[in-house]
Length: 369
Image (cartoon, rainbow, N blue to C red; front, side):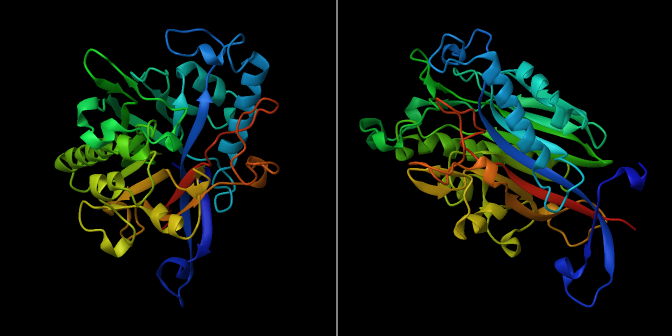
């Protein structure tokens, strides 16, 4: 691929490895995750979408749906533009997606159609009918394999104390459905996509872990199981390729400090703590500094996270490596008045907003020789 077709970032090398160095050129790709919050169309399908129909509780009309698509496309086209102003994200993980059709509508929006995004999507068993997916720019990323990996969790995984009492303060509109015959809790599958980013193999995992419906403590074992499954998937990738590069992203419904992330996945806050086959979570430090991707129980937190394998942290920039991370929260995406001032601007009775989450992103860079 010719260099002129790539997105090139110019900056002084001391930003990475110290002063007294000459300026160098780098290719940069933005990788993002965004919870689209109830991206439903207006068509009645075989899922629990009755709320999101023209005669449903949300009075969800075609006009509102089109405005929602327009709003999301605007955000997606601008994520990472501070340091990568010439291109939207190369890879976008998404959550709360009704079906492939809404994604096809989304990537046809004027703000995105010129980027020629491809879609990887599977229907999940989640009873709300919401799934995860990956959008990718075809000119830069070529998928070679993809599969959905079910998260099998059951009500009997809850401890006895958790069964006895719900924490009503932790009620959520993201309800986990339980099969009364099997006691299985139906939730989203984990999406695993392997492909080549400008010729380099990258593995991408997209998650939307079980909600806190019924209480954080009661539902914590479900997310802990999700964290362990993520770790198992990563380990299986390493068995095939010990040098594999892995990006693990999603709405985890837990903070960077929770057991599901710290013990299940094994994520570390500091790069120097990450050993071989380990995982780095740049959003843990960001959370400690007061950044937030959403507001939960009136406090900011980062449930939306992108974690990176140790292989993406090496200081040799002859291949793609992690540079830095961010939360994309521009003023137009933020509620400006009322009880929820400062929160993400979401859909309401009188306004079609964006999402109840802010998107998160990381940059991958490679030196141009």
